Amino acid sequence: MRQYNKSFNYFAGMDDKDVAEEIRTTQTTGGRPTWTQGTNGSAKGEKPVDGVAPKPRGQPDKRFADPLNLFARVARNRGRKPMTERELRLVEADRRAFEVLGFATRVHGDDLKKAYKELVKRHHPDANGGDRASEDRLRAIITAYNHLKSKGFAS
Image 1 (cartoon, one colour):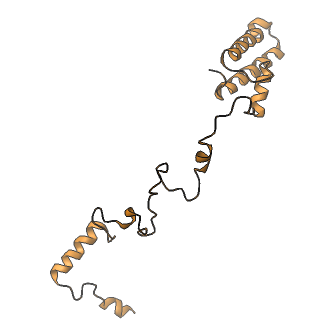
Image 2 (cartoon, helix red, strand yellow):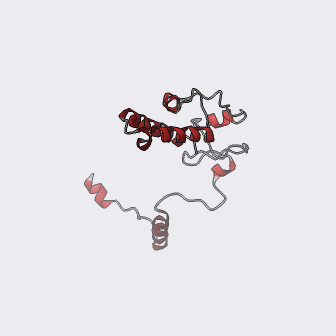
Protein backbone atom coordinates (compact mmCIF):
# COMPACT_ATOMS: atom_id res chain seq x y z
CA MET A 1 0.00 0.00 0.00
CA ARG A 2 2.80 2.44 0.88
CA GLN A 3 4.57 1.68 -2.34
CA TYR A 4 1.40 2.42 -4.30
CA ASN A 5 0.87 5.72 -2.47
CA LYS A 6 4.47 6.78 -3.09
CA SER A 7 4.25 5.99 -6.77
CA PHE A 8 0.80 7.57 -7.32
CA ASN A 9 0.92 10.64 -9.58
CA TYR A 10 -2.30 12.65 -9.82
CA PHE A 11 -0.98 14.61 -12.79
CA ALA A 12 0.07 11.56 -14.82
CA GLY A 13 -1.17 11.86 -18.39
CA MET A 14 -1.66 15.65 -18.22
CA ASP A 15 0.43 18.09 -20.18
CA ASP A 16 1.78 21.28 -18.60
CA LYS A 17 -1.18 23.34 -19.74
CA ASP A 18 -3.70 20.96 -18.08
CA VAL A 19 -1.64 20.85 -14.86
CA ALA A 20 -1.53 24.67 -14.71
CA GLU A 21 -5.32 24.87 -15.28
CA GLU A 22 -5.99 22.27 -12.55
CA ILE A 23 -3.81 24.14 -10.06
CA ARG A 24 -5.44 27.48 -10.95
CA THR A 25 -9.01 26.19 -10.46
CA THR A 26 -8.31 24.34 -7.21
CA GLN A 27 -6.50 27.32 -5.71
CA THR A 28 -9.26 29.72 -6.73
CA THR A 29 -12.28 27.72 -5.55
CA GLY A 30 -10.73 25.39 -3.01
CA GLY A 31 -11.61 22.38 -5.13
CA ARG A 32 -15.35 23.03 -4.81
CA PRO A 33 -17.62 22.73 -7.85
CA THR A 34 -18.69 26.00 -9.47
CA TRP A 35 -21.28 27.06 -12.03
CA THR A 36 -21.48 30.05 -14.25
CA GLN A 37 -23.88 32.69 -13.02
CA GLY A 38 -27.53 31.98 -13.81
CA THR A 39 -27.14 28.26 -14.50
CA ASN A 40 -27.73 26.88 -11.01
CA GLY A 41 -30.44 24.26 -11.54
CA SER A 42 -31.97 24.54 -8.07
CA ALA A 43 -32.85 28.20 -8.63
CA LYS A 44 -35.14 27.19 -11.49
CA GLY A 45 -37.21 24.85 -9.34
CA GLU A 46 -35.31 21.77 -10.44
CA LYS A 47 -33.67 19.22 -8.15
CA PRO A 48 -31.67 20.68 -5.28
CA VAL A 49 -27.94 20.87 -5.85
CA ASP A 50 -25.78 19.25 -3.14
CA GLY A 51 -28.83 18.68 -0.90
CA VAL A 52 -29.62 22.39 -0.52
CA ALA A 53 -33.35 22.95 -0.79
CA PRO A 54 -34.51 25.67 -3.18
CA LYS A 55 -36.28 28.73 -1.84
CA PRO A 56 -40.07 28.40 -1.93
CA ARG A 57 -41.38 29.68 -5.25
CA GLY A 58 -44.98 30.54 -6.03
CA GLN A 59 -45.74 31.33 -2.38
CA PRO A 60 -45.59 35.12 -2.04
CA ASP A 61 -46.26 35.11 1.71
CA LYS A 62 -43.29 32.85 2.42
CA ARG A 63 -39.87 34.42 2.31
CA PHE A 64 -38.02 31.27 3.32
CA ALA A 65 -38.56 27.55 3.72
CA ASP A 66 -39.83 26.38 7.13
CA PRO A 67 -39.71 22.57 7.02
CA LEU A 68 -40.01 22.21 10.82
CA ASN A 69 -42.99 24.63 11.06
CA LEU A 70 -41.16 26.81 13.55
CA PHE A 71 -43.12 29.85 12.39
CA ALA A 72 -46.50 28.14 12.08
CA ARG A 73 -47.85 30.08 15.08
CA VAL A 74 -47.33 33.36 13.23
CA ALA A 75 -49.31 32.11 10.24
CA ARG A 76 -52.02 30.64 12.49
CA ASN A 77 -52.48 33.88 14.44
CA ARG A 78 -52.35 36.16 11.41
CA GLY A 79 -56.15 36.46 11.05
CA ARG A 80 -57.02 36.61 14.75
CA LYS A 81 -57.86 39.76 16.63
CA PRO A 82 -55.65 40.60 19.62
CA MET A 83 -56.83 39.40 23.02
CA THR A 84 -58.60 41.94 25.20
CA GLU A 85 -57.37 42.71 28.70
CA ARG A 86 -60.20 40.68 30.15
CA GLU A 87 -59.01 37.58 28.26
CA LEU A 88 -55.40 37.99 29.37
CA ARG A 89 -54.67 36.33 32.69
CA LEU A 90 -52.40 37.81 35.29
CA VAL A 91 -49.53 35.71 36.52
CA GLU A 92 -49.30 35.22 40.27
CA ALA A 93 -46.49 37.75 40.75
CA ASP A 94 -48.45 40.46 38.91
CA ARG A 95 -51.61 39.73 40.92
CA ARG A 96 -49.68 39.95 44.21
CA ALA A 97 -48.06 43.23 43.14
CA PHE A 98 -51.48 44.74 42.38
CA GLU A 99 -52.76 43.58 45.78
CA VAL A 100 -49.79 45.20 47.57
CA LEU A 101 -50.71 48.48 45.88
CA GLY A 102 -54.36 48.05 46.93
CA PHE A 103 -55.99 46.89 43.68
CA ALA A 104 -58.15 43.79 43.22
CA THR A 105 -57.96 43.93 39.41
CA ARG A 106 -55.51 45.23 36.86
CA VAL A 107 -55.09 48.97 36.35
CA HIS A 108 -52.79 50.93 34.10
CA GLY A 109 -50.80 54.12 33.98
CA ASP A 110 -52.03 57.09 35.95
CA ASP A 111 -54.22 55.23 38.48
CA LEU A 112 -51.34 52.93 39.35
CA LYS A 113 -48.90 55.81 39.65
CA LYS A 114 -51.29 57.82 41.86
CA ALA A 115 -51.79 54.91 44.23
CA TYR A 116 -48.02 54.31 44.37
CA LYS A 117 -47.24 57.95 45.19
CA GLU A 118 -49.94 58.09 47.87
CA LEU A 119 -48.72 54.86 49.53
CA VAL A 120 -45.07 55.98 49.44
CA LYS A 121 -45.99 59.29 51.10
CA ARG A 122 -48.02 57.50 53.78
CA HIS A 123 -45.37 54.86 54.61
CA HIS A 124 -42.24 56.99 54.23
CA PRO A 125 -40.05 56.94 57.40
CA ASP A 126 -40.25 60.75 57.73
CA ALA A 127 -44.06 60.65 57.74
CA ASN A 128 -44.75 57.62 59.94
CA GLY A 129 -42.56 58.38 62.96
CA GLY A 130 -40.03 55.56 62.43
CA ASP A 131 -42.45 52.61 62.55
CA ARG A 132 -40.53 49.45 61.46
CA ALA A 133 -43.63 47.69 60.11
CA SER A 134 -44.34 50.69 57.94
CA GLU A 135 -40.78 50.59 56.57
CA ASP A 136 -41.24 46.95 55.56
CA ARG A 137 -44.53 47.86 53.91
CA LEU A 138 -42.73 50.66 52.02
CA ARG A 139 -40.15 48.17 50.70
CA ALA A 140 -42.96 45.88 49.52
CA ILE A 141 -44.74 48.80 47.81
CA ILE A 142 -41.59 49.90 45.97
CA THR A 143 -40.81 46.32 44.90
CA ALA A 144 -44.38 45.78 43.67
CA TYR A 145 -44.42 49.02 41.68
CA ASN A 146 -41.03 48.30 40.10
CA HIS A 147 -42.24 44.83 39.13
CA LEU A 148 -45.39 46.21 37.48
CA LYS A 149 -43.36 48.94 35.80
CA SER A 150 -40.97 46.36 34.33
CA LYS A 151 -43.98 44.42 32.99
CA GLY A 152 -45.36 47.53 31.27
CA PHE A 153 -48.34 48.28 33.52
CA ALA A 154 -46.92 51.64 34.60
CA SER A 155 -44.93 54.23 32.69
